[in-house]
Image 1 (cartoon, rainbow, N blue to C red):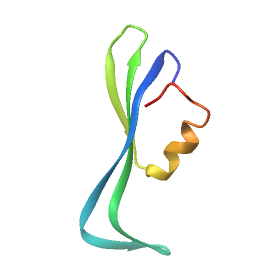
Image 2 (cartoon, rainbow, N blue to C red):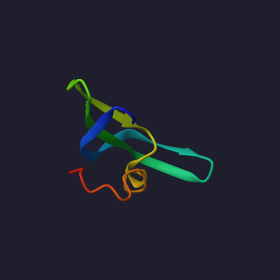
Image 3 (cartoon, one colour):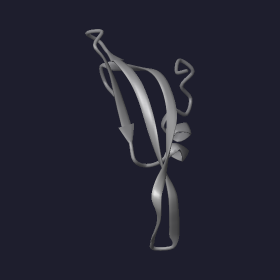
Length: 67
């Protein structure tokens, strides 16, 4: 993200009350990627995505400054 720096990254796993199926997959939990970041003006925030925790290593590939 231009103008900001990631401070920490983690995944959040939330079990679903009911197992759901779609296409060829069954889901019993929701996995979100969560990023804490700081903008150039020092304001901090948290962002998340629904793509699952498997995407985080690809997004941050090559970054050494993220915890």
